[in-house]
Length: 192
Ligand code: ZN
Image (cartoon, rainbow, N blue to C red; front, side, top):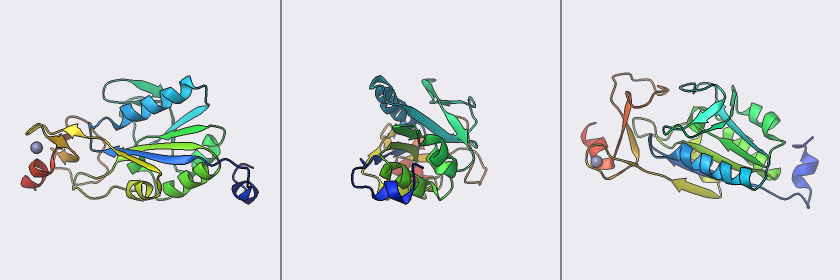
């Protein structure tokens, strides 16, 4: 059993690591995740990619970024499913991490401690500019955090906020160009 206590404390077990790629909508998070996963595939490492079942904007079994650069992935209901399904991989990618439950950081720690390189992509903030779901905790426990930026549609500055154009007030509104636009700090807070 991969995640038994024996294995976790065994001196010769090589440890993995956790990387987080985060930023606003349209910041290239998924593209960066795909780039890192492709490099792992080129290195002939077994890879597995997971995303929450909630995010079904495009295809059921492919991570698709906004530029249609896609890679196969498995939709899962709960982060604990990743432990079972990802344990044979050497590199596990997780997209749209903000939509997962609060157990995701713990799942990522178990995977990394079992020797797996875990690469997580997700929104760091919701449309109100508040930390989003399990992503802030993941940023805290990760070895590497990469913040990527979109371009502010108002002024052209680097954007790290996802401004919601529609009236809907739910945190979990899944959508793309018709619902959100990337904005810099000044253009985001000026409209609040
Ligand atoms: Zn701006």
